[in-house]
Length: 336
Image (cartoon, rainbow, N blue to C red):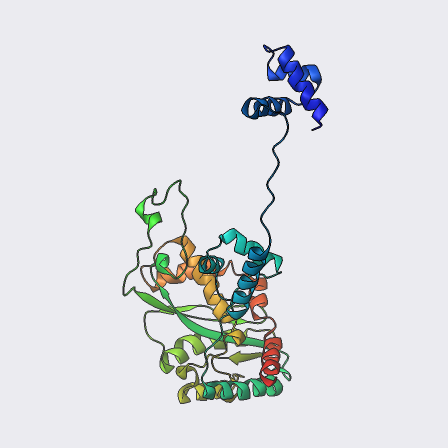
């Protein structure tokens, strides 16, 4: 504000000491807050002039801290802002500002299978065979199957849990804690998903999967009817579990005319080629949200079927889409 206007407010106040700040503001057509600030400044410092603002310290120290932070980030990008700030005795906001000005962004690390040398060689060989001898020559549907274990108490499934409260712990115990059994009861869930978006009927049991159970309940009762009812050709892509490629099961594939991917074309330890793993994660997250418990296999089946309808055809197609592209990308990255 100009000095002239400040002085005008002060003179008006001196000439009319009983006037309120609001009346002076109305008389001079100046904002009330401005008038009050000027009068308060006069009472505190006996002056209407603004105090000279101190300049922010800058120079060698700031430049040195900037250099240290960036050097540390380049040496170890996995350190948090808190760790860097604690290391140099700086404020976390200062470290965050330095990182932001340098154009650095935070990214989530991607999970990668920790393969042995032998596994890596086998994976490369089979991925090339899969791509060049199978995927590039086949234009029908791909059906993937797998099994997973699901805890009967859905609240104990992996994942974070949050609650809203004005203070920590100010809610009932069922919201405040995640009660975990040391040896929680589980059930095995088997299902298959297709690139066209269809899903096979689910099979749930308390037993352990073996060749006989897999052949009778999964292949004969669910996979074979699914393939026969399909509009076009279907190539079956089983998981690499030993029971999926046992001598008994391989003979069943051939006797029933099931077109399947041979073991020598099936790369091991490649979750990026198995979208059904993401399907399991989606279903378990939906089960956990219910917070309920399955009493037996029939109850688990009812829960699973109901929630599986929420993963519609389009969602399954998105999951299964781009498998050929992913295999090609894997081969090219490995060849570099």
